[in-house]
Image 1 (cartoon, rainbow, N blue to C red):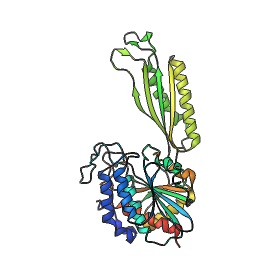
Image 2: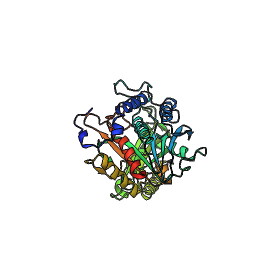
Image 3: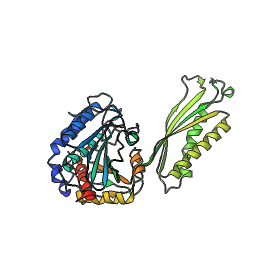
Image 4: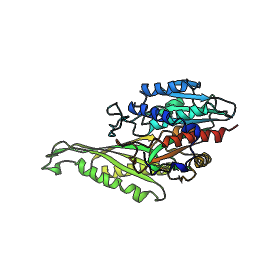
Length: 395
């Protein structure tokens, strides 16, 4: 626990503060048993047991493994979302609550997300509201498009019955100091795309390269040229990243191989920048094919779209957070991460917010095997959920 964090400046809701020990236990129980994608039996058991004690209307197995609990009243309806799944990462932390599932770890804070929403559900279940709340617990955010699966589930249409007016999500991050947020007025996350390139040449003996079509030379030139796209083709007022993350070719020192495989990712916000980068990759691959007399096969995978916040919703979230953290700051530039909450904001107005939990002692980034967070950040997040609901649905 970082003693440098001044909690006296925060306005934690009393009902939430009283549940802190319960909150910590919930989070640690889930952290010990991290589960992946849609296969979440232990995590779901914890959530369902907790929700059933609150007397809420519960829908199970939504989108294969999702859970939705509902407080239903006349008036508008909001949806609050927490993701449940962990990552295929081996934890390096040596703590009493470290993962017992070797190779799996809650390295993205989803155990904290679930805990904050459960505590908020408990507090709000005892309050009078002029509207409905859907507490949505989502599987498979880490690459499985769990949000899409929940939205498309005809057994319980999560955005209907009652119809959802606005959607909200939060994500813990050590990249932002505790007590602060990033609530972007427009782009809250970036698109996450992947490219797969195979260069097919003609292998042969390393002593006679003139008899070959060298895929390694072509691949090296391709990688260097790809790195000029962002710096030379994208207007610097737009954020974009192109990273080559894999280059595989050859097996022995004395033979030129037949082929070369290259993989990478593209991150950006605006659709037109996304399209420009993809167009330039096609053009560069065509140039390499012509210049090196090789064959270049290119495939794209559009994985996640960017989250586009509704500006009014983002401003409301920032105003609500100011009540919890009066001295906190609001960042407006989102990180270049991919997140499948865009399925919700594509369907309804809403806001996805980064909730700072970083301290001097705990600063490992998301997806790091050393990731952990100061559990007091959950007091802030749960208080925020409660306050946001009251601000939107007060009698």
